[in-house]
Amino acid sequence: MPTDPTLVSPDDVKTIIEASQIIDVRLDEIQAGPLSGDLSDAIVRFRRDLSEYGFSDDRAAMLVKIPHTAEWVQESPDGAVEVLARVRLVHVAHFALTAELPDRPSAISAWIDTNVYFMAYPYVRAAFHTVASILDYPSFTLGYLKREDSLPAVREGGDSAAD
Image (cartoon, rainbow, N blue to C red; front, side, top):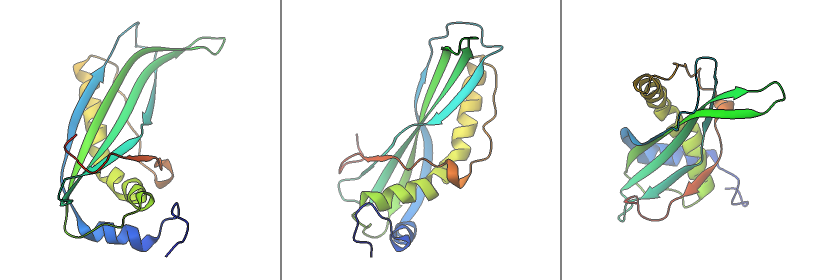
């Protein structure tokens, strides 16, 4: 067992995997706009934002919020970047818990980065494609998700997943 609370034991992640069962992944929030120019020549920048998690009061369930932002931007010859449009989507992954989880945010963060994010990514790809189409923004395709692409940044949301 690591003595440094920021280090993650593979056994802790394995324990979380064994104690959790995914129930649902749903699109929970959509923010779009403002549209401020022609997007036909824009470049799309895509990022994963800070994830959050929380537990139900009885700790029998966990919700993980996974936000992403896509920005359609234009770069001027002098290097200035203008954001022409922005779409932010937040997905929530719902897990049933069958056992007590390790009480270390670093272990839960590692589980989110190495497991939950990969479960949610197909839903994220589909949602961005659909929302961009509905908004009549130029389509874009998110590439393969690679292990090194995961962002180890998670904020604990407290003891209640009802927020």
